[in-house]
Length: 209
Image (cartoon, rainbow, N blue to C red; front, side):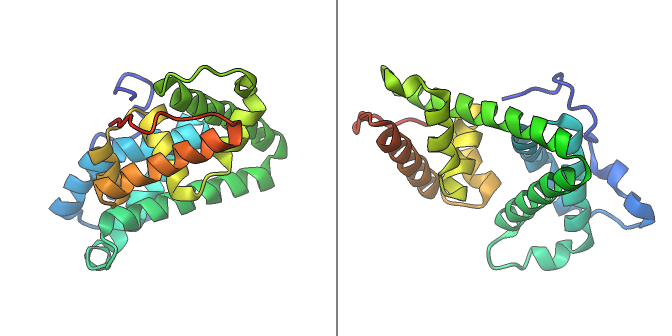
């Protein structure tokens, strides 16, 4: 995981800097302040990994908390819970940023897509390394990228949070609004999908946090 000295200081240390976004004044509830302190770092890490742009990631997370602040009372009553609601919103904002970049600057979008491809390949390799797999033909970056990029959304997110960012199962569950057992299942299914695509075997008896 990244630490506070890695250049992410564009993200405010508290919600004070979010109080007047877009000229709108509002009071931040204490529960949202606590939510921010608990989850904003992981949300920023995830956005930066996907976008490969720390400034863009900080902008996305600011937008997320602006949205949450404007409807926090209702969001807490969402049946899915505020964590899952925030995670879904974060993903929508990341995707919206990617689409906007493509429309505004196709060249920059192509560069960012290349960087994301490299990041995805790194996660796939970390997965295989964690299982001490000897890769032969599976060393192909294209094969590794394809295997991870083809995962369903939740499996992909769990792999990013666990293998790229180093978060443990319980914290991933909290961030995504899921049960720890569900996170473990998503990770196991993702690992099995990657292994199947690469034609390799995983140690079925190995359990990792």
